[in-house]
Length: 119
Length: 115
Image (cartoon, each protein chain N blue to C red):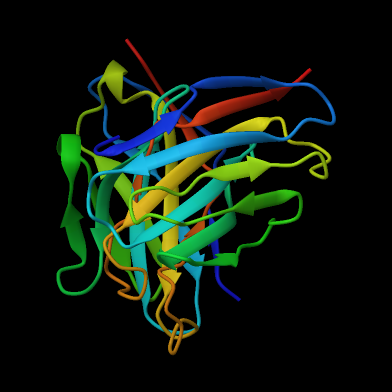
């Protein structure tokens, strides 16, 4: 079964410090991995995705994520946090193995991690 | 939020009433999705559609219905059979449902409250 775990409900970091939001996944085949951000009472905004190739993916607003197949992780990182980065972050995965023969681009989402950056 | 619009932003429903949430996209995307978001539970898939006049149930379809008469529109009806409809509803679309690499883009959401 496909699943995504975000082990931390909340992450707090000081402005200017590096931040990490953790994500681990479980799939049958190769994963396609996504990160989204949600501000209060807004929809989800796409940040970045890993499909294949370089394990380090760069995305919007200075965020990047590192795909680690052996640890089945896809942690979101930023070298220097901003107060404006405070939001809810979602990791999502698509399992290419279970979707073989399927025609749906089904995403499985984690429960989200609330990031708070304090000044 | 791109080219996906959802209306209304806030919706109040009395118990026993059906309500319809609108979702429109101008991205020329084939696939559209409805999700429900509850605090601490992430996103749960309600219904999805890959082409016009076709749609499938997601994980929590009971008490909901949809239609896909036009490519750009995918309205969701929350029926009186939905026991706990108070939630934040998100519509999404992607270029094609069958391609794994396609990104889903989300609308701004509708917050439904049952009075």
